[in-house]
Amino acid sequence: MKKKYFISADIEGCCDVTSWHECEVGGVGYSEASRQMSLEVAAACEAILEAGHEVVVRDGHGTAKNIIHSLLPKGVKLMRGWACHPGTMMAGLDSTYDGVLYIGYHAPGGSDGSPLAHTISSSHINWIKVNGQLASEFSLNSLYAECQGVAPVFISGDADICRRAEDEYPGISTVATKDCRGNSTFNLHPADVCDAIKAAVAEVMVREEEHPTAARPVPEKLVLEVNVPQHQQVRSALIHPGVTQVDDHTVQYTADNFTEMTLIRQFIMG
View 1 (cartoon, rainbow, N blue to C red):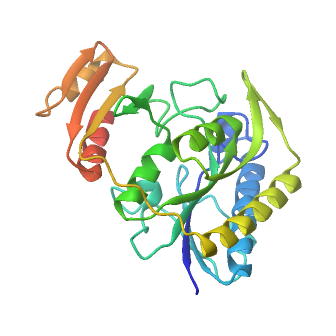
View 2: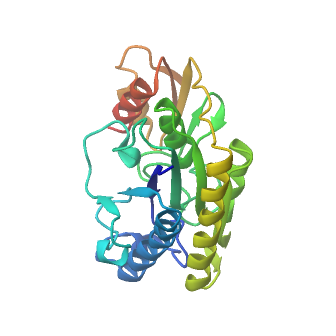
């Protein structure tokens, strides 16, 4: 039976990407990073298409205009730009999809798993916790996917995010593109990374055909903690009803659903 899969792609976790200027349009090394991001996404798409399924890709980094569409296989739909949607990096995902895959993901803010470790914005947020656990962009986006009834089935990125994903979702398939050491990265060859992604996703397609992964139930309450660089952000956040102060740089809010949590998070970021 033909299925439909969603890919959310970022750039910081792609092979060889090591510094911030490589992640920014016009920065030194950006064109190479954009190309590698595109090739890693293409590898996953090839495996999905060869299994006889449909795939839609969401460019989720920066301007959301990083992936070179012509490097993807024919038949792949690509969502570019921001949709003013609470799903952000997951905008476009709904309950009609059979699984979600993540390419180029990275260690969260508050960890030392990557020189590019951050969650959402390195300039506005130090770290985020949800229900007491340090949250990565993978954590937040998978929570959104589960709200749609869609389970995460694969992730590629730095070794730290792969380990965290395996802890959060035992059984998820992973491909580590690099091991991060301090302010450096120790990378596999870019072509080897693409080969590994394609092979792993092909195995996921077989597994999902035989034993589809079910989405987990979403917690009834989502306790959001956000630690910010500037104490003025805390003062501003306290204006919103329900936001409480934990310390000079941390606020907390209990949300009843993911959309409410996202709106509060954006309010805190300013």
